[in-house]
Length: 450
Image (tube, rainbow, N blue to C red; front, side, top):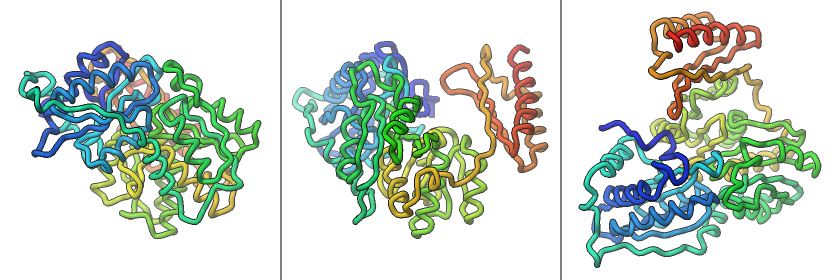
């Protein structure tokens, strides 16, 4: 398998109208993916969705041309959350789904994510094969004139996702009596998220729901929670929900204005599902970034925590291997395989709201499941190479892990997109944490200039 150059941890991403996020690359991607998924004698179909970035129009048109030229019918659904595309790809028996989005990045960026017929993100091997096709002669992918694909628009796509999301909420329960502030980041969920919450009975206050092609994630959403906190306090709401640009992840804000990350959300859902006998695999899947406090909390309930590399795709793969139905990331991606195949911020919020309704407790009490260990992350830039693999750095890491002896942990990894070493440590107290980080950073910085 040749190494991937275009695909990263979550599809292809870059600056809009610059390679690889330019029409020429998108056209070749459509042709290559069309050829890769052109299997069998049935009429082939791809679902294409997007968020609200201006560049989405350009990439949508180029991808459509590529797929149509490869003999694939294209179904356009417009702005919808990423999990909706995975859902539609599976429910409509499509050969693949495509989401045009750069998630929480600013509007200048864009990205392309691919889902297979089961609604799952493609494996590294599949992505490498598509890249190889893109780099070669694509003339064999060109359909004859009579076998060209056709493009159409699915007008009821939002309604399909709205109903699927509502079905994830417990039957016989409503959100009546709850005031919820939802921040859609001027992104893909700006219509569907407020609708789902309102139809389930909540009083909904919506912000970040006026996209103009340029304002996605700008001062709003899961990475900019200050506006949500302000509105929540002003309106005395029970819960705040902040989605990112493609709504595949979330953070929450309790009624006191405290921001709640993905680790606490995972703990809450795991606790509830275990109590109801719904949690499978006797474990939860998370990444190497999740706090050690989550791991201890689960262990106290006889549940394991399986860790993966950063990326919800790797979380999903491990869930399937281990037979788990719950996994996620500290950053807010939540995969609940009972309801979907990829991260879904809105459905995760509904699982939390179900607990609030059933327990009758405020969010500040329900969402404080464990005390996180103090954690610190520092990015160290370098001029190239792999300084984190130099013998003196490897030895320093091993020494710190030995010294912590279960009272914390360290994690050193290279960024996949920039010349940066990410240095993370957590420990039982701030003094131990700072001492550990100081020694690690000193060693790594010496290595970067060696």
